[in-house]
Image (cartoon, rainbow, N blue to C red; front, side, top):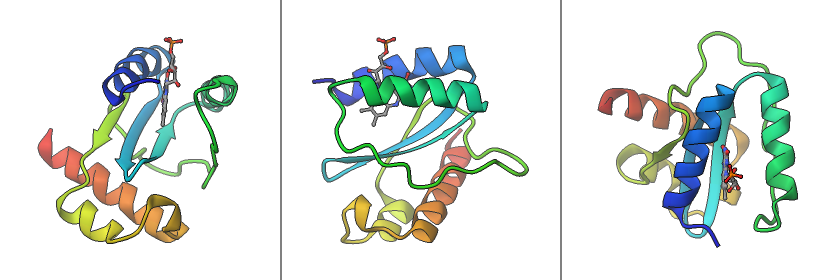
Length: 117
Ligand SMILES: Cc1cc2nc3c(=O)[nH]c(=O)nc-3n(C[C@H](O)[C@H](O)[C@H](O)COP(=O)(O)O)c2cc1C
């Protein structure tokens, strides 16, 4: 089992190398991650995650080309579930959010991080 600190540490090193940018939310035992980068690097990461026996139930929610500025600026940033982000999640587990809610959540999370940076 990996701790969240270990996941963030390994991801930071690997994603920096692969020029990927990520936002990670952990809430009620579930992870949700936004990850941006070149298609080939994203595919390689996904293959690694899928073949890692410590992962279960990986679901791709949205897979689309970024038009305009990417959202993420850090190799891997953890999003705190408080303030606006907590209000958007409400009482629900992450896998009960709709796709528009997920997109709005990451947009807000990225803005929150920008303000903190
Ligand atoms: C929810 C979740 C998200 C992860 N995201 C990434 C990621 O973006 N990049 C990454 O390299 N590893 C990520 N990992 C960690 C990988 O599972 C794995 O531990 C790591 O890539 C191993 O790196 P290493 O072989 O260089 O030690 C994630 C793990 C979890 C549980």
